[in-house]
Image (cartoon, rainbow, N blue to C red):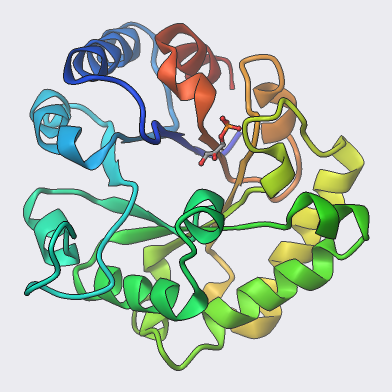
Length: 252
Ligand code: 13P
């Protein structure tokens, strides 16, 4: 199996103590069993620096959950791409459904965030996916195509400058935190569609990796990762429990 990406999005969970404990357990496990895959942990912003100090000698990469749409200046409460770069953060999520739907981030904001990250050489993990009603109304492919078009064909972001700084993460909104996962047939068809759509937009994007996220568990991870065109997993709930996350990393 080729090298995959396994990313753990911790969302707004944990304490400093529990985050350090979780990180140490992952580090210990990785020392014992060789995991060939690229592991990224994505803690809450306030824990990024202490966790960076724990993992800096390991192969684990650090990701942020969010970035400001603006560069440094009078934007109270925000954290800029420059600051993330300065803190040795290598990845950052953009477009997660919780930020699109709960924080109401629109395409304009997402484009600005993409630009800030490209300017700071941080790899974007760009999340997209359909809602339950769109899925029920069989609009999945239409919605995904529109979301990808907005990302790739936008003149507002500067992605074209560095296409290699992008990873896509398909996360059906209805699969996040629900225990529901698309059927193997649905996933195979959707990932083929995403890959073809991306390739048609621009050949420079043909090597972009595409992750799956939404109710990934230690039980379903092996079959998910076997799906053609799935280059890795973006894991929420299961990434907060050391044993589950380690099992996923070591069994695929
Ligand atoms: P769950 O794995 O908890 O469904 O969350 C998925 C997710 O949103 C990862 O970004």
